[in-house]
Amino acid sequence: MYNKLYIFLLLTLVSYTMMAQTKFRIEIEAPSFINDSLIISVPVIKVGLEDIYNLKLDTNANVSYFKKMITTKASVFQVKIQDNNFIEGNFLYPQPVAFQYFDRTSKQISVSSIFFVDSGSFKIFLPKNFNQLDININSPLNNEYTEFKKLITDLYFNNNSNLKTFILSNLEEKESRIGKYIKINTDSYIALWEIISDYTLYGYNSVYLKNLELFSSNIKSQYVYKIVVNRLKADSATIKGNEFPYIKFEGTLELNKEEFKKNSLTFIDFWSITCSPCIREMPELLKMYNKYKSKKIKFISITAESEIDKRIIAKNILNKQNIVWSNYFDYKNQFSTKLGVSAYPLYLLVDQNGYIIEKTYGDLKKIKSILNEKLK
Image 1 (cartoon, rainbow, N blue to C red):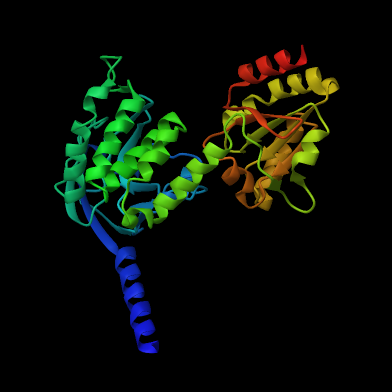
Image 2: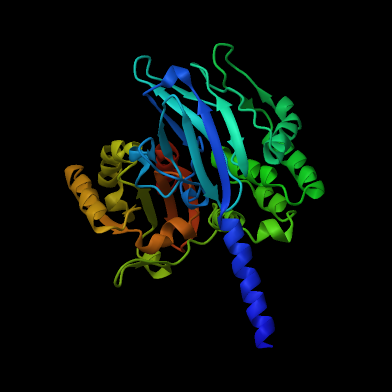
């Protein structure tokens, strides 16, 4: 029995080590950017899903973490381009990335098309203008991605001939096609990441969870899958009409049914010190507070940060903006996780019985409209 247990543990350790040490090596040829810097990262990172982008690059004099994103947990790297450029690293599971460049003269940002980090060695050439440039890598994963895109290309259209921007015309149809694709390709990381991309760009949709159920047990066992499913379930549980979850803050501070009963309505502002729109809207929040405070409407702000130094910054911002109502800190990310937060600022209205009557990202007009209607 002990021998069998030892063999099992050994095989598990070997399997995990092999997965953790999946290596890749990319040679970058970019003569137009000598002594300048490029960013390699996923183009758009959804709030709350930073952890799933755990690509690791070997850092050196020319490869480093991008300083502006150092506070996030996502994998964002800066590469200083030389005559010879090699980036090496490893990953736990395949994930999408793209090259980005900010032109300080024209103030324009170039973003290449997405490609997938795959095991092996590859070479990439980047011309001076690589915005939306297709990165062609001959690897199993990227070859699958090329074929996969053909299934959904007709669902996108370009509304500006001068810009390479494409708009999705029908999300439901796209997800229907993805579902059919997964049924045949149950181990497809390409399909998994496309669902994550749609969730990031277009917000919650119940069809994502339906499609995720179609994947193999192998995909379902992966960290990225579990995190995304949990976030989607949190979103599903906290849409309008559902009960607000119990939230525990530090000490005796908490949000529960008893707290909501004390007021006719509770307005909640979830914000971050890194979110400029959050801070920009605070004067408007103050006007709302002064207008509605006599109507038994309680205002609560919840700051995403919980570290001591960031709390100090948050308190200074609140004081400067003359915010006088209660501000809590998201202790152990309970609020962010249970509410499925995907962006800042998040505004919520909760009724006296503890049910969510509105959940919106940054739309104060909608919040004020509902408040005025409720008060008639």
